[in-house]
Image (cartoon, rainbow, N blue to C red; front, side):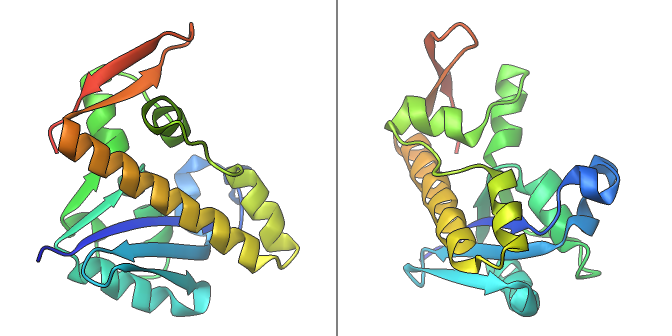
Length: 177
């Protein structure tokens, strides 16, 4: 059985706090979450377990995420010399952007495709980190991983996803995963 690992992480700091989007690795991970199809469970990683998270990603047959190539992997590059872009990866944002020629949010795709919305925003997770509310971050991140998994599976089965354009019209986009 192919081990697909769905992955997301939250950060300790915002881009503004570290001096811009060119310093993503300085944002530091607060919580990382994976769902492994082989294991059939979620795994929550604190910053102290980041090496175990990186090992799980390296061992996956395929890592699926949303903006993980540019963002999540770059955060993890602050912890390892290993180039995570060498891991077999499906970044759904990259694939959709290649087709549509513009970016979409995971939230907009999940809402139009599945009728599900994210439970909060990334900046809220940073505030929770400052307050030491790690359980809330873990719950939020787990739900993002679940959305990522559901969107990926929907696209893999039906070969299309849905989104709303800026005028509110529901449109479809073909996918090849």
